[in-house]
Image 1 (cartoon, protein in one colour):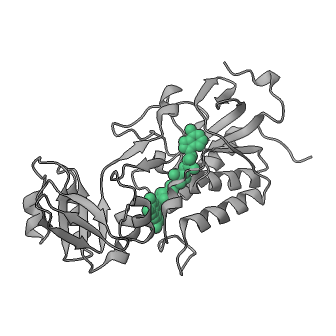
Image 2: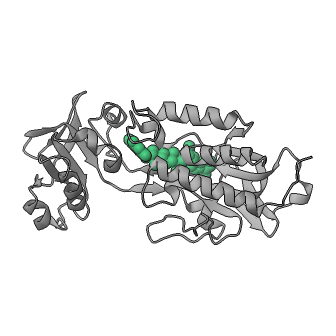
Length: 305
Ligand SMILES: Cc1cc2nc3c(=O)[nH]c(=O)nc-3n(C[C@H](O)[C@H](O)[C@H](O)COP(=O)(O)OP(=O)(O)OC[C@H]3O[C@@H](n4cnc5c(N)ncnc54)[C@H](O)[C@@H]3O)c2cc1C
């Protein structure tokens, strides 16, 4: 159980933020500007690192890469003396006084915890995937960047149960949309997609990448090239540590929160992709502002000396 009475200023924080992506870094900036002690524990694998160039991120009319955005957000949080440690939190304990977070070799205590641990995309099992994402031949988020694929040839790769809905969404960007099913099941909503002009290629092919474009190689060896392929294969949640400390999850594995971003565990907040149905930077930073402000209000009042 937490032993907050014996914790030192070095290991006891008003708030520990778990995750150093856009959500966690924004929360840290807010907390430090509330004069709260704050530690960010980060495993260093933000989904934002994959963004070659974001063009819907507020304040960047010329676009910004994910790596540069993270660098700036971290610099901003560091500018207010946020503490950072590179660590993966493996377990969280909780009682009425607060939380103890356990890493591999260390432990930290906190009055409140903000989980900003994100998610990771399930991707095709190929060594070229990172290179294809970096050049836009493969795209992972249609809300983020389908605009950039407007009027181009778009492939939608994924389970037959899901791809038609994604294909229909993308049809409002281009009339050249092809479904590339990864299994032989019935494609849900196929009639609706076909009526909208979405085409479907036979199941049984594989994706290839020539350094510039992805192609769908059919079972007979023939290839169909695309300007962009969107794999929609689901994601790995990072909500396990929240569930283990008693936080309720949705059926799809997202952490459930109230309007203050707090879970059903008092003092445990969750923000960003690990929570949201709309996995966007603007949503993550908005949730961070709400959670940080609510955590600040929850903590004991400290008059300025
Ligand atoms: C290719 C691509 C393009 C995108 N383009 C855009 C775009 O243009 N616009 C937009 O709004 N969004 C875009 N997104 C989505 C955007 O990247 C995410 O919505 C955003 O990164 C979510 O931020 P987050 O802080 O919630 O999670 P993340 O950025 O994923 O950060 C989570 C952090 O928590 C850490 N972590 C996880 N578990 C633990 C643990 N147990 N202990 C310690 N640390 C942990 C991870 O290592 C990571 O550093 C894109 C995503 C991808 C993949």
